[in-house]
Image (cartoon, rainbow, N blue to C red; front, side):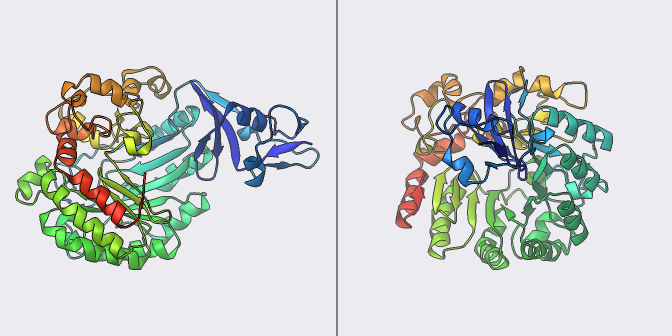
Length: 462
């Protein structure tokens, strides 16, 4: 019997992580056991496979159509052949394609009317970087800005991504510049991204975004995306004046067909504090608000995934929830990295600086923290192989706790994931310091309240 790995799959690996299967259409990668990898490596249309010999045939590979019997002469495509990348694994990245934006948001340092960061990589810089990413085994990208859709050459950039086998997984946008023509162009290239659209509340959006009529345009484009069948993730920034808008906005998003709804409080940036000093929601106020909101959400059975940044993540289909700071509940231990999300997706800013996440971009620049720069001579593959940057990415909760005596003595040390590194820096505690929000969360009783919400609504608590 001769089997062939089907065309939508390929085998790949990285230094220290050699056994993976990639789904080429969406860029997702799956870790394989050595025996599974050895079997799929033989599915080349040439090797005779004995079902009774080692390696054993994994039933899932045949049942899912990943490998199948082939006709005489069928072979793997060149781009399907196994490739081992010399750098460490980083198959997913976030890339800012511009520092420009078309809105004047009151909370953002990229605002068009506030000494904007007009820095923007050239098209050639971006195309070269995409080729280097492909050489490092990057399979998926999230595009960000500024506002990425202000680039007139955006489709040329996404075309190069398709050429290099890099999937546009997510597009982060303020939603004002989405057009049917853009969507058609991406679809022709084979891209079907998750659309991560900012919308800051019914009756409130225009105030935060600083441009009249923006709310109507964004709602229209959210509906356009939903009607086309795209996965839409709406991101709502919250301040004191917008709290009453959350529930009606959530109901409107449900009615429109939005797939995922996210809430995050506005960070007290220098710009925000100078414009709206009395509108910041404190951590204490937000944690007091959340239990009642979550109870309302599940009482009304809103048919969307829910993400309250930093605190709660829930999936509509499985009714599984994760209380985000509680790492122990997710079966993790001190070997877990200090930021699970950042460890799987680093960020490259429009000026070329590489940081662990977008939240660290502005604050590291403000503090003058030196970062590797892919547009100023630092080699991407070298950065992803052996560097101080990778040491930061791979730092575990156990390693960080050793630097924090207060955390070692805390009763919640086996549950707390130590919070956000950007938040710790913003609080003046340094990248390796305490994120005091976690202390408030656990010691202030919010943790117990959120667990009670999960139990009340029979949610599968992870």
